[in-house]
Image 1 (cartoon, rainbow, N blue to C red):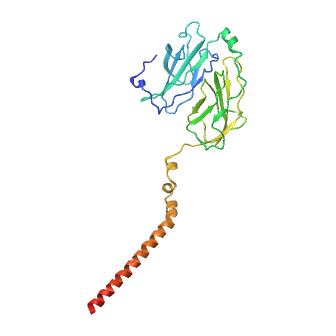
Image 2 (tube, one colour):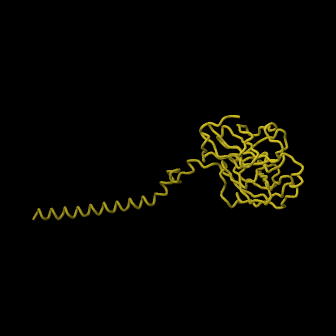
Image 3 (tube, rainbow, N blue to C red):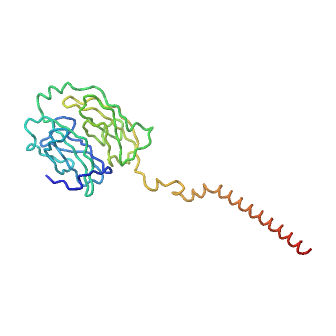
Length: 278
């Protein structure tokens, strides 16, 4: 295992934390050794993974740098009799690190647990909260947030995002743990301006719950500095055209004052000449 460097003692709020996507939801691992994955974070140079036997991470079983989608041999570090294992991940760069992700959990298969948990299934779909629909403004493609209402007894959720309403070929398809929100960074291409998303609950052993109805939403490229400029600054000619009437009014008033001043000076000069002639 690698030794944490001094800068890792403080986290950076500007660096987002990843969201664990595999293994999650308290479900038994489907590969041996298990493969760990999470949502990518732009600019990340590495990720640190911790595995523990408790959700509070008092006893760390594994702590090291890992690549997304890498298998992690845990057979030599898991305690005997363990049935539920917890893990978390954080983003790191050369200068900073994120906070830890929310803990995810997965099961070391046990017959007693399967029999007990098989009945814990709620036949209800989560209610999508964000994005809400095409009535909302387009979402910045560089950071698309998703959120939904929790389902009782759900141990996780499966999220799908696709460019078609039937979600036949999802562009995004992964599970998350007991969180009810996730943000996708630079994942959805802007070529497809409209996407649809849906969510369903997962349970430790029982079959997944029903899908929510697909919700459409629009994405847009990230705003640029030029987009942030006022229309007048971005288009000087438009600014001049917009200022035309006001400029003409100011010019007219100035000309009127000038003519009046000349008339007054001429009158005073005439009076002075009369006085001198007398």
